Image (cartoon, rainbow, N blue to C red):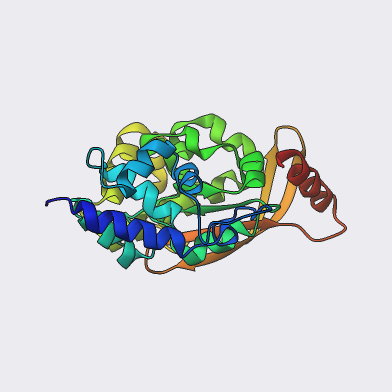
Length: 276
């Protein structure tokens, strides 16, 4: 596909100008003259240099890579249709939609932007964390440091023993069965050749425990809303995990809370203050 430099520049500029800082979780600040987002704000949200982004809007520079297009689409809170259009303007075929996609919907991002004082994360159907709030990082660790199959919590559960340190020992058996059950559901949904199939084959080859649990052929095993986490500094945390599903992308927004007046509630308040 050929890159449409003029169309790409115009589309990016119109999308940028249609957004306000509060739409993407940024403070407005004082003496703001720009009608929409500034180029430097989009560049920061997309984790790229201002010069690189500005050259795209000015119809200069090289063709942006697929990963760069994905970062810009996420920074501008584009819908799936807008994201696909952006890819085509940049001369790329759009990524697949559904369970294998990593593009967060604008609605999910808006909710996440408003949870800056609450532990929360967005995960894929394979347990890969795509985005976290700052208290979420403090509670669960920085997911951006993980790559490859280890991005999946279920994969780490059976291949890295230290993963279980953050979970109450009495819950380990149920959580392992729940991960295997969930992976079986996704595999049946996505079929052979899917990422779920690759992950399953890898786990069967690497983990004797996973093979044992997999052979039970359990389905519908869920850990429930109650979570008992063991934080390295704060100790035991008894949490409620509320889940919001995005049916179009197969993503889940997980929000961790505690009842006011409890010891865990006070610990979460401390966690939020420290992470800020």
